[in-house]
Image (tube, rainbow, N blue to C red; front, side, top):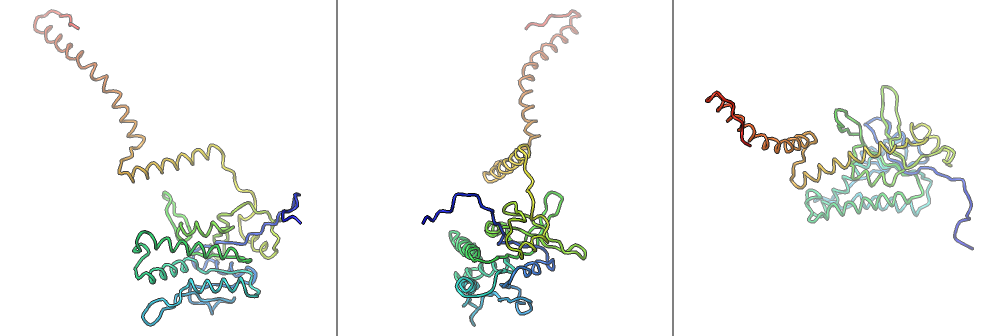
Amino acid sequence: MSILPPNKPQVPKDTPRNFFIWGPTMGGKSFLATQFPNPLVFNTDGNAEANTVPSVQLRNIKDEKGKIKRSVIDQLDKLITALQTEKHTYQTVVLDVIDDIIVMIEQYICDKEDVETLGDIPYGKGYAAFTNIFQQLVIELKSLPMNVIYISRNASKMEGLTEIEIPSLKEKHQNIVNGNCDLSIQCKKVGKNYIRVAKARRKDYMRDQVDDPAILKILDSITGVFGKSPKTTKKQQEAIVKEIEKKEDVLLAAESGEDTPSDESAEKTETKEETKPARKQTAPVNQQASKVAANTAATGKRVRPQI
């Protein structure tokens, strides 16, 4: 019997299972996460016992000398192994919040190497160790036959004169998390209303392809999950590429210590260079004209200039 599937059309089943939820404090992030089926929360805020759903407190435990004797890495490893191997009824695991877990992993590596920061470990080995541990954690969570939810806090940045909201999770860490997630969801409170918006999605999801009714009910409460993504025209694409290339040129010039002239200054330089030969050609003519004027004034007769 062949291990290959039958070569015939099939109805796709496409239910998102991995989520990145972010937003300000008391914006409804944790509440949304606990609406998923049978959740288990890996908590970092010290209030695991105050949750209404089963929770585990994550932390680095130190000995009497202040050294970490049991790390959050060991704790997560045992929890994930239990979810993989033991019989249980959990369907969703929630990391609340992922920002704190990252800090605890960094603390463990620094404590192990007896340094203050990852940058104090020579040859970039500290950053490499962290990236390896964090990527492995995300991959192992994704391999679970469960829904996985990462929660992050809120931050902001300026784009021109406009302040926009972004996750507090650093971009390099977001790339690892979102690279293994299906949806990025922003939660916030506007007045008395709680808002949920899909800010990024892996693909265009269709309601009739979501085969889990519980997940479908949650997705229906989030704006922007379903429907076609807007297409980028060729003209828009070329403008975006041109802007990216311009920024890359500026960065390269800055790294090499060269000044990058603006378009306006470049035009002025070209104009100046073009007019130099013209001034050199007209200078002798002006000198001859001055001599003619001087001779005419002295003799009273017009003298034809010699060329």
